[in-house]
Length: 68
Image (cartoon, rainbow, N blue to C red; front, side):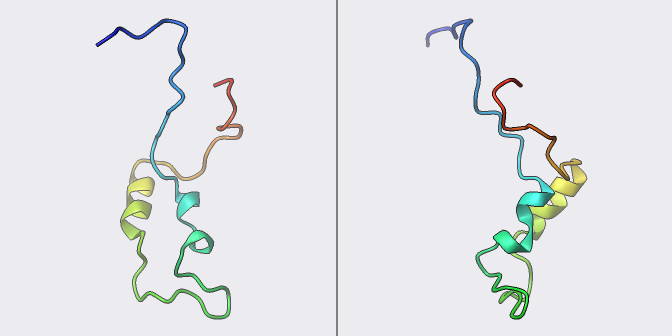
C-alpha cells in the first residue's frame, strides 16, 4: 500500500448523525401536521439517543465549508 501524500486532504469527515438530522419532517413515514407519523414507534430512536449521548445536538455554523 502506498503512503499517503502530504498535499492531500481527507474530505470524508463523517462524525455521525446529529439530532437535527433526525427531525420528523425528514422521515419517510411522516405525512404532515394533520396526519403525523404512520409508525407507532419512531424508526430512528436509537440514532436520536446516540446523538444525545455524544453531544451532537446541532452542527456548528459553516460546517460544510472547505476551510475547516
